[in-house]
Image 1 (tube, chains in turn blue, green):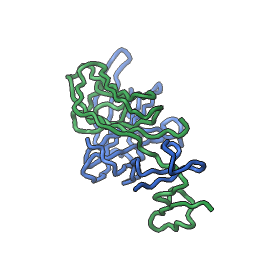
Image 2 (cartoon, chains in turn brown, orange):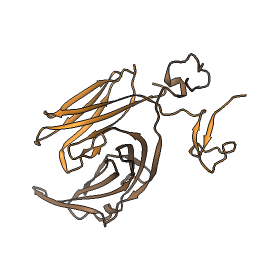
Image 3 (tube, chains in turn orange, green):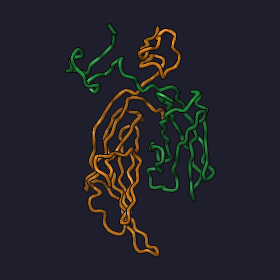
Image 4 (cartoon, helix red, strand yellow):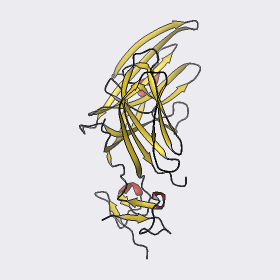
Length: 146
Length: 126
């Protein structure tokens, strides 16, 4: 027995193209578990490194923080950050921004208990407001099986 | 009269709510259907780059989401590097109408094994 909802104008009984269906029990969907945001603070774990080349000395900071999903397995997840250069625009992780002052990179990772958010900064001086980065996340119950 | 199936979230009136965010399911709205999925386990990255591929069998361009578990035990998104600061180890995903490609880099690091999970979603209008 199936549950099929076709799009308007299509016959749910005979339609075979999933693009013409709003729902079909033949196809799995993503099921929400958690949605929210996490602001990486200056109290987060930071890794410090530096290197010197022809152009001078560059400093590397990597701020990491996490949220607990608590599912006991690695779930399907996605994360976003607000664009550093253009407010109200959001980039999916991973994303990178480079200007004449610095390179910034934002990433998200997962294990069977947490989602981890990292904000990395490479530039000629200390990162200033990088630690105030907010990540927006969505975690689904779908088990990656990894 | 058009018949619909709706399931509202707890606390929301299924008969009067209009915001799709207040519903668990609404048969008038398309769902993001997973058309195919697969797992590649213990794939060895022994070249730079090293490409793995699967035939998705959907018969057209699809939207792909994928995840890769690196040796440090963390699962990374496409275009990310291994979380444990191995910037030489990173990966990309490319998609055609028949095939999904997973492209991994190792740089000067040792060969490593990777586990990949991929999902192919429908692309309405494609």
